[in-house]
Image 1 (tube, helix red, strand yellow):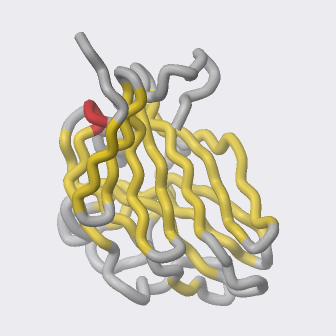
Image 2 (tube, rainbow, N blue to C red; image 1 turned 90 degrees about the vertical axis):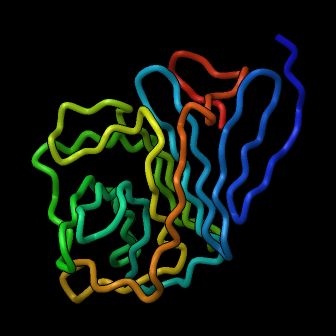
Length: 185
């Protein structure tokens, strides 16, 4: 099999192939999400450039068709300048609820030099009933505009409807320099 280096861009989504692997990227405005999978995990790195200092907001990524049908949501919050990442589920137009099983593993989270950056992993196939399988093609929702938190740190309605796009994780594989502990994005 011959593998070439090329870049394919559809709307705001890119598949970046290097050798025989391909990390994927969604980017719009200041929001960027890199992601790839190995056998067990989907590896994600969310960056929000020029984050407004001192503002309590949320962003993240969600999996599923719509809030009405239910969304498996990984929330990234900045509350009082502290970054947190949570595994949640949203059904209907209500505040997402924390999953009983928090199986998102945060590798790092920082808010420095004006940029928010979080790297985390989630199982491809989860034994949590609130998590959707990321093994095949599935709509992903990208909340590319920061939205407010209330005074207690709870998510409020998004300012702009997240952009939805079907993502097929078999097209987004960890890069050739990956190790058993680190996926090259």
